[in-house]
Amino acid sequence: MTLLNDKIAIVTGASSGIGRAAAKVFAREGAKLVISGRRQDALEAVVAEIEAEGGKAVAVAGDVRDEALQARLVETAVSRFGRLDIAFNNAGVVGEMGSVAGLSLEGWRETIETNLTASFLGAKHQSPAMGKGGSLIFTSTFVGHTAGMPGMGAYAASKAGLIGLVQVLAAELALRNIRVNALLPGGTDTPASITNAPDATPEVLAFVNGLHALKRMAQPEEIANAALFLASDLSSFVTGTAMLADGGVSISRT
Image 1 (cartoon, rainbow, N blue to C red):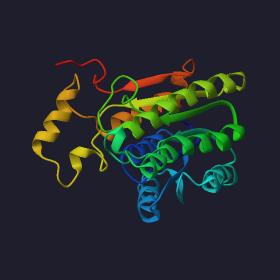
Image 2: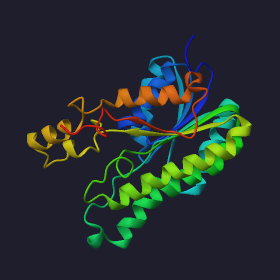
Image 3: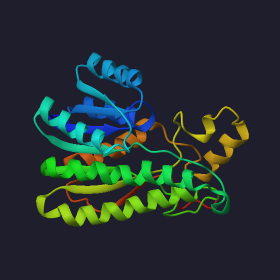
């Protein structure tokens, strides 16, 4: 039996990276999916890959900062598949980099709105639609939780705020048996990673790898498998957590 047999899931940020990997893993484990991202063509490619493996998915493109999109994702899950069981609120940005003194207000607001406010909007619409046994998952990070990284003030603040939101949601939704957790990846080899930037050097990759106790970055599928744990009944007594899946970057001093 598959871990998410006949479950209905929303996955945001699903056009690439962790979200794409999670959508495919969830589908292989039996979930029917509503996937979202900004690029319709990239989403349709993910849908095609899922359907080629016998799964079911529908793509809804848009900006997670738009409350109308968040409502539409839930409405699509209910109208197409009958209900909503799981939401993996994964979409996010690193945003403007630089010292706090040099950070623009526009850059700060864009990062906060994309990483934190959009998650609030997701939860606002997803939680009322969920029945007992539902699971809300939010992608946070170790940055601002176990480590301060220079130049990442807006990113750290948005993701740390997300952990606070998760704790409140977990307390509010517990009586309905809806679990709420944050997933905190370490460095992950995605298109958005600094190690894949056009100006990235082998030295940058070696530095990032070396920050981790395992001396490597994660593959997106590894983080997707951690999300699968939180989405499934394997984590039936896990709620309100900030679960690290960071390759030991939080504890490594070597």
